[in-house]
Image (tube, rainbow over all chains, first blue to last red; front, side):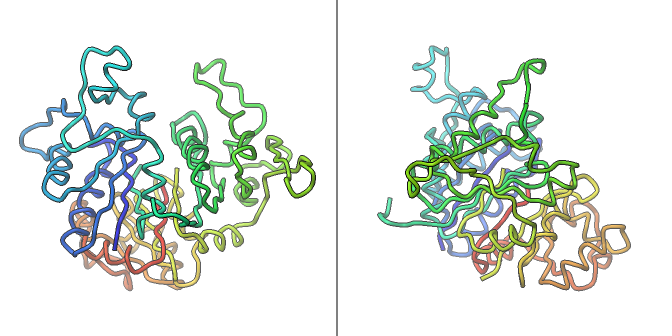
Length: 130
Length: 137
Length: 102
């Protein structure tokens, strides 16, 4: 079965990102496909490579980036939500005259159409939020 | 995208506007998503009914008043907008407190008709049970 | 096919669980995750809500979230089912849709 996953909260403040990550791993281990993980609202904050969490705790960004690298999961950050919250890739930084970008490996920035596509094309969409 | 897939898609709004961004960014999904021509329904229940109240004035909180954007739902071809009757009553509200939101009925010479339908909890539960996808904000 | 309703907030903090249970369809399942697992303890003032959901369909709770919050399996309301993340995935697959009561 093809799963789409929607993550509506950033890491650490809420458990949503942790639960979504564990759901994604369990789905893959069970032989399902994770078609896409879409990050919306504060969920876009999962995709900054500039976070430096304590070493004795999990690093959510790295967990997601590893999932993309090892399992080929498509991690998409909503561009409108990302602009509000300062998550930028090189193109976005240049376009808005910012002095740097911060997107983490494995994540890409795109539009809400990617969420709609996940809702339409996945067999199930599961939402994790506040 | 695979051609011709049409899913029943319900947006569930349960939060008041302004205290959090969910109402605004939820509405953005509805408006952007309209281009995908799915079978869309939008429901307002619990504190979500406050999103549709007439007379929102955000001047003194410094946050953009986006309530007028709900009036565009009809222009975006959204035809199923539901407000839960019990949620209004629990909050001491009734339909007279809601914004007038209309659509132009293409089957009736473009006549302006009310877009919002008041439904009771059992009917909303039934609508939820008929969907392919439910997005909650 | 029925719905898997996912609740992640404590009923002592928000109305998500009550609203969810007020909108259940026949045979719909409820899954408690994250802070919602506090509702799984028997003897609390919200236990009647869970019992109401149990008369309609199954009620599941994510065991990992119970353990994290020191809620013992023995203290969980009779009739509720404990699952792991793989069980969560299978429930999502077996139901026609999921609804997260955010």
